[in-house]
Amino acid sequence: MSALSLYEHTRSQLEQLCVVVGTDPSQAVNLLSDLLGPAGSRPVRQPSAWPSNVADDETPIEFSVACNESERPTLRILGEALGWQPSAAANLAAAHRFLGVAAHRFNLSMSRFDLVQDLFVTGQPQGPFSLWHSMVFRNGRPPEFKVYFNPEVKGAHSAPLLVAEALNRLGLAGAYQATVDHGVRPGELGRADRLAFFALDLHDGPESRVKVYLTHHGADARDAVRAASAVHGIDAAEFAEFCVAAGGSTGPFDGRPLVSSYTFIEGTEGPAGYSLYVPIRSYVSNDEEARERVVALLDRYRHDTTDIDRAIAAVARRPLSDGVGLIAHVSLRLGLPRPGVTVYLSSEAYRVCPPRQVVAAAHSAASHH
Ligand code: TRP
Image (cartoon, rainbow, N blue to C red; front, side):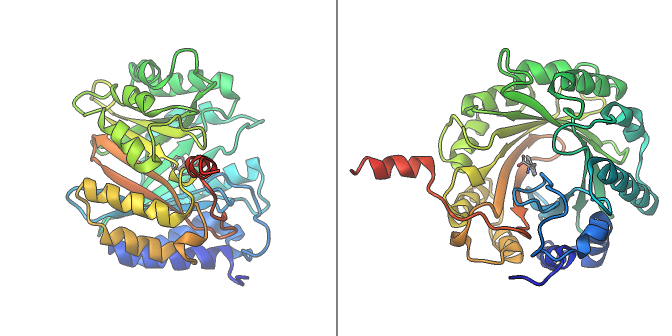
């Protein structure tokens, strides 16, 4: 069993990932340390200090590698700041502390955050989290930051109001209606289709984004195509093929839900971009199978595939066929600001999920009897 601390475990993965994408590890490692705070020093053989929903095994960190058309892949970290004695309130305080430090060090723009953050604060927070962070490391540039709010923090019934009001305050008046018109099946808002995340870029460049995420329980490829059709000028049908290539069928996806996100950019009418996240780990029996699908996808979108194998090797601490969930999601992004494929990699600091029979495989095995 590993004697490493949570920080040591995730740091070694991060350092190797930085080498793969060609970014300076010292800055990324410092941010990892700030984000984990005191929780980082706990040995990973002890139970996690907080049941973070960032990853299945409660690791409060998830890596991802975003492949773009014309640049080298970029490395990203999604994370949840944890308090000294983690609790919903202590973690939110830690998240604000982390943001304060990062805002100061990297001169982040907090104006849009300040415009909406009170909407997502309550004394009795519900659901799995209040505030998450992501950091993007692009070659030779300062890291970019994003925050994620939980629209269901005041309960599922309040999520539509919170998201609509937040979009209004940000000057994106038509955005909410466009989201529900395409991204929600009739009568399913707050039921099978849920507002899962509300995210902001913490800079005010022209590409600064607001993103609205929906989870679609029991949805199929047609639902993804309909959701994508909210964006003008992209080929929404691509997402059906993506479902098949990543998820192995046209659905319905009854395991972990498909996830949509809409990207809004100021001055653009309607959503400028759409992403579909397929939780591939629910639809494969092990990570070797997930890797094969991901490599085929990258190939199809003409991305280099050697980088992703190096990224997987940087994170994996076991043979790929020995578990499932290292490759957690794979997403396809079309529209602005840049199209591409992103692969989400779990740290597995606390646990590896054993390989399993997928439903489809179980059916074909049964039919031989
Ligand atoms: N672990 C959560 C989930 O799978 C949240 C999450 C982490 C997520 N990374 C993600 C959701 C990428 C969608 C896409 O839902």
